[in-house]
Image (cartoon, rainbow, N blue to C red):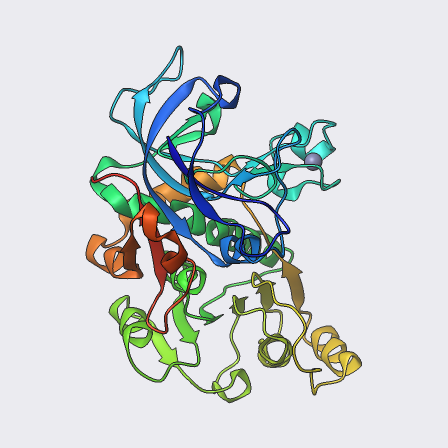
Length: 349
Ligand SMILES: [Zn+2]
């Protein structure tokens, strides 16, 4: 079968190639790939900046934002042939740490977790893949190809769960949320905010086009100014850019007793113009919590599936701005100015 593979840490090594059928050791459920979403992590792996091959191999099958159709449910999976499923990305570490031991592998304490398509387990960019029944999430069949948005939705589902949990340390009635960034994570984070009944604001650089249209279409307000100029003090900030200046200004504008959730992963950049102690003083004097959030556990995968099933299909469909064939995977790894989510489509649906 065909698969998109990469030799991790070797820039430009990604290729479409023939590989053996999926190993039964990867699970008793056999799935036909329908589509795989591409995100910044895939681009980083293809550029040789990240990623680990399975222990006995030099190459890794790429892809962690899956959507597939069950070919063979195997024994005791509860699935049927033809069901649409998405594969969970992370697997608990083998020790296991206390968090992995209770199923909260998203909070792994020792970093020895593994991840499909990223860290030591083959991913989902192959014509067929196998999965353990307990890591296969059945998606609402009416979502169709939109099920490929489940993985990014799990990330913001977890972030929102933690935002609300952190807020419960004191009496708290959050009403306003500022989401920084209008990529897939920012837009899906805004969608969950709307579903929670919040007044949602989204801030991004683009002045016009699809991003502002999508923000307004869910009843949120779009801003293309600096965070410091947004004109209100949000109860919640969901930071999805990873940009130093945006993070620093978020910590300054967050309202009293508000919560800043950092969900963007950035690197380097200009030295922030706001001294660290000034940011800290602002947080102290306003009782703020600033915390990071990554990945998701099975509870979040379930809740994200529910959130997608409730969402407007035509709005979700506009998030998928481009579909490429496996042969054109290299085009999918380049993000265009108007792209939100690019997917590689393996089979029709
Ligand atoms: Zn662990």
